[in-house]
Length: 122
Image 1: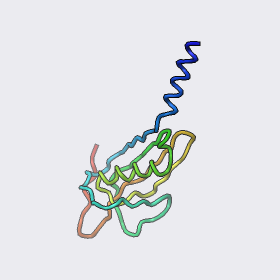
Image 2: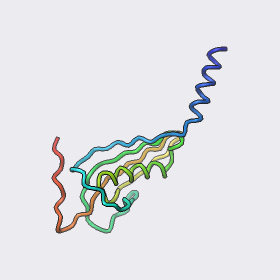
Image 3: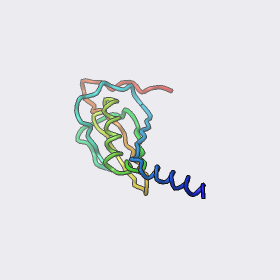
Image 4: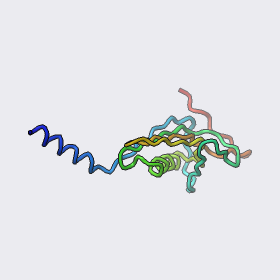
């Protein structure tokens, strides 16, 4: 009986949780200062209107209450802002029962005047 009450209490606590999102990254080039603009999102095979270079590979995983497209893409965009990216390309989000997984490539626009920073060597 005690085990049942403890288990029931734990389940009630878990069900009351709102959820959380984890963000992981592989930084390919030195992060740049934030642009002050919103990070654009290009989903799947959508092509951005101008040339770009890759800054980082980003992954976001939303759990429980954060296991939806909005929370996962917002986490990706926020981390992109922090890294100084202009856009996220090749973004994909997969939804599960209590988890959402999203990933994309964080990019900056390539211009003839500015050379991209050198890749980070490992």
